[in-house]
Image (cartoon, rainbow, N blue to C red; front, side, top):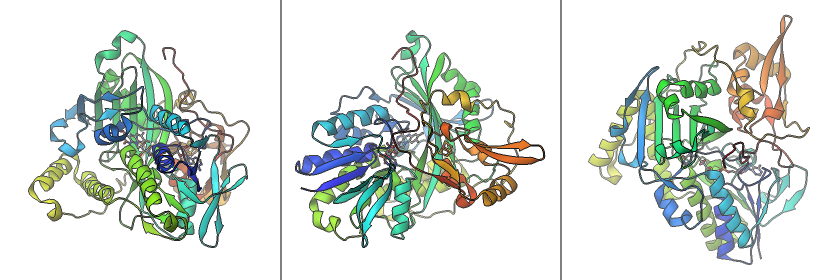
Length: 504
Ligand SMILES: Cc1cc2nc3c(=O)[nH]c(=O)nc-3n(C[C@H](O)[C@H](O)[C@H](O)COP(=O)(O)OP(=O)(O)OC[C@H]3O[C@@H](n4cnc5c(N)ncnc54)[C@H](O)[C@@H]3O)c2cc1C
Ligand code: SF4
């Protein structure tokens, strides 16, 4: 009997757990999740590709599984929009894909896992690993408990703290780009309005951003509307506030019409990791492997990672079972499936054209390239990404009403009395954040955790760690890594499963 520990009860971790248990019921499979309940820290759109849905997920009785019937891609201007839907290449079309809810999906996967004997422990944040010689032999929990295991699967999602420690330990560099997704769930004030738009999805590019990559989405479920905005974190204008960009898109004349007669019921934020694919996809180490979004297995053009997370969970199980001894002992291996690598490379290429020349050109180029050239002869080149405009002026929304605190009331946050954020070098932090970057931390955090306050002639740095949404933007955006952020014990943090609405 082998004991395998999986870190993270997201789609990747839970799929791996179910498949490993099904392969051999004698194995002891343990899933450790930092949130107080499965789904508590999960945020996603969430469109699932139809292949993965019908091949693997359809057998679970999901509450949300709406087939997408209408889709739109709009390029917004300040007061209007251009409809670009007709330029969408087939591979970026979502008609027929399924609108699911990631919390609902993971709850159903965890019920199935528990039924077949997988042990799922919530409120178990993992902060480090135990090693023997050069192998990983166990984990250290946030409360200091040490557990030994035969094999560890890390499925932490984007910007995992354990993942970064492992990559550093094995001296492997995976070049990832990060984006912050801010998302709100809204319910209809009047239930009769519900059926208006079910199964429709809207994606936007353009305003309020000057950069081609950032964009918004509005998805219509049977009883709710989900609206979100994704900001790539490579922006150079330190005055930009992702939260304000989100507020602006909600106030756009055409978008505000879409969410008319709804009221917000949940607020959440999370990083998205995109693998830049310019190094080997090494993810299998001695006694341990990394899967899902922790590796950045997300298509940067579609902003979809659920299907790759599920595939990587299944693959790790298959690979584990076929090469058990090798994986448990000493192999550093190329783990990721060739199809996933091809998909991510193509997406990266289109994405760099998109950023440089705009959406229409990128889509036309992608379609022509696919039609004209056979598979092996496709033109492949990469522009250096144009990150981004160097216009470092306060945006015109400078005076937008900052109601981040009101939004946080909808995130179910509880930290007890425990702070998990510290400044590790106050002088360096002051130089880089206050002096060189114009108090950037006041703006990048979607929870308003950081604030420079003027006291007499000087600025004092204040933190409100009890507001933290655990999106991990501060780990990416803090110049010189002057902020220490650690995984919490006891399931502290937000709980995005909390119900804040009357009619559910
Ligand atoms: C706003 C937004 C919209 C998106 N829209 C779509 C979409 O429409 N379609 C799509 O396919 N994809 C979408 N994605 C991406 C998709 O959500 C991810 O690709 C997918 O969730 C990755 O799954 P995962 O299991 O690898 O990681 P995650 O879903 O992030 O799960 C990781 C789990 O590990 C837990 N964890 C993390 N660290 C620790 C630790 N140290 N100890 C214990 N537990 C830990 C977390 O709490 C979490 O439960 C979107 C993402 C965002 C943020
Ligand atoms: S403190 Fe950091 S992790 Fe927490 S919400 Fe702000 S940016 Fe996100």
